[in-house]
Image 1 (tube, rainbow, N blue to C red):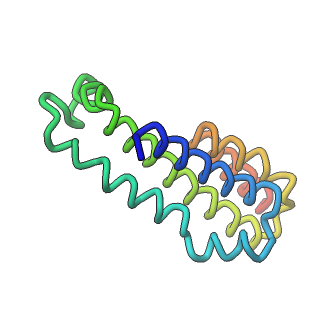
Image 2 (cartoon, rainbow, N blue to C red; image 1 turned 120 degrees about the horizontal axis):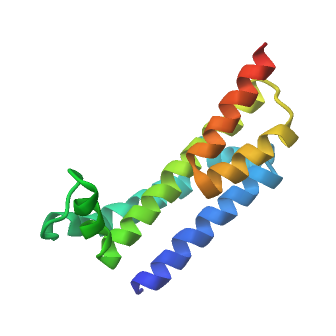
Image 3 (cartoon, rainbow, N blue to C red; image 1 turned 180 degrees about the vertical axis):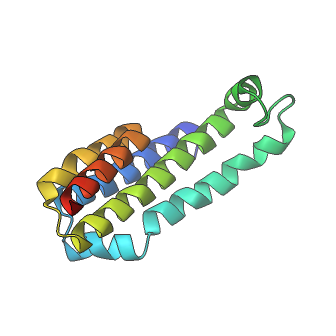
Length: 137
């Protein structure tokens, strides 16, 4: 399977998981996938396969923006970076769902947080923190 197919598979799988979180947050399949994070584990395996190129990228690293740019010039490392985002954003989505259900925050308030976490990671997480704080007051 080529790198483009791996990209499509990872992106589609993550998007389907997000749809479950947004549309069916209390469905037993969704709850099972949150409890046993199969999708983030799959994404982590893909990440491990493709991050190996990090060690052979001349001038690449994390010490400067230019070094990071060098890493992402490689399609394999760009895929690894993308899959990294997909996995960690999903884990944040799982945490938001668990937290909101424990605190009985209405799901309609959580949906924008999930959508923003899916699209812009920290923005959705921040919005959820604000909502959670307001609801605690």
